[in-house]
Image (cartoon, rainbow, N blue to C red; front, side):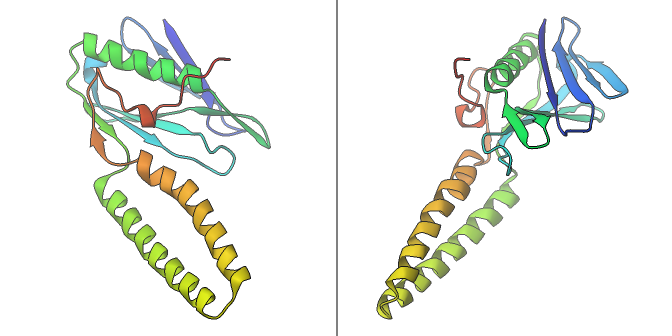
Length: 190
């Protein structure tokens, strides 16, 4: 049996998931259940960084007939500490897919964010890039080199943070045999 546990918030209950012979067993606060692998309708993997943890991944699992649970790759430890659980999360997600395949699941396997959100994000980033280039040209034309340097620094930071989010969350479909590596944490030694 493979088990994965995390805390979505500091004050809330822990989320516990077990991959059993009967299916995906979950326990969240006072609620619990077992979803047979063949009844899982979809799995959406995405990359969702947040302020306290830039390396946060998410799996949204939906059951045929209703119900959705979320599995995050990070857990709250203290008021100021959210820690990654990269290896455990990766192993859990890979094993979940292996068991779903073995059960003959017909689940929709989706990677990234929805196409409408993705196109909207890319459009906003493109408009911001055009605006920043315009400001940079103006700063250079007026010999405001400090302002130009600031804009270059902001552009690099923005490309690193938002660019990584956009690149990883490109909408895609995947198979049980080829999970999108960009939507799973790297398997780092403990």
